[in-house]
Length: 422
Image (cartoon, rainbow, N blue to C red; front, top):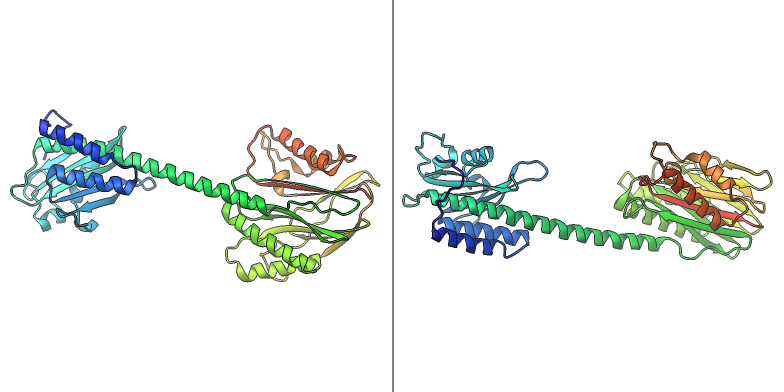
């Protein structure tokens, strides 16, 4: 057995072979095709009976079988494919190993695979990329005329180095392609989710409505909705799903559709959320839930409100000049059966304002780790109570951004403003 570094034992024929092998191995960036090119070129160059390629798993750091072929190209089972004794030695030393007397070589302890198959000659070389082990190339033979030379060893070392670069390039190409595909799909999903947000504001005399939605990731679990119920009333909804990303986005779409359909069917706000709660409990097994605040506004300033575990809206009363928070109530939708939901009736006066929000707003942090909080939200509203709903919303968002000082949001943020002008 030898374990010397690459020397000048490559013959002109080997150099010519290496050139053609490199061209063959680099002819494709598709990983599976590149893998087949590498194993085929290696078997052909070494005239071995069996050839094996193993790669280092990115997660575990352990070797895993990539390809194992026999002399006729047949696939080999992993347990029958190679000598673990030789492979482990190569991994430990990061150097190529050669033996032409594996059965009786006193410098190695022949393992079961060597003894069972009467292996005679074995060659194994590490695949290195910038001093990093990415795998090993292994070939062997049991034929008496199948001895390997030091030139074969050096050729295999050169092949292994080129194979490592080839497979790493193919792997990175695959990662880039997959990332691009996922980014494209996420962008499409985001566009679809944005398409679920209402396009038309409700038009009812005496009311101004404005809303915004900002996702912390490609997709969000927050959502808002508003819709005309008839000529004399409209509904608004703000909600926050318990999770983030794609699962929450799907859950959000289901919850939104249920709430809308029940509201359009003429159910009261309490019945709308109760029916949605029961249906989600019947069908959902994910353990996810959604907090919801649902209000219905009527001509003349009358309104009905119901809370299912959501942040209570802030209400500004023009008659007193005070900004307070409405009462909490109920449990999140999809959490428990028989949700204790309770409706609250409220008569609005001209100049009154309701601010609906998700905790991505009040939990927004500044560089010191402080939260924006409910007090700052109330103060921000008090600064612009004479303005339109759109101006109020813009001022709140600007206040949060100034407070955060560029800190990246970690949660979705949704804000909805209803101003009653009378």
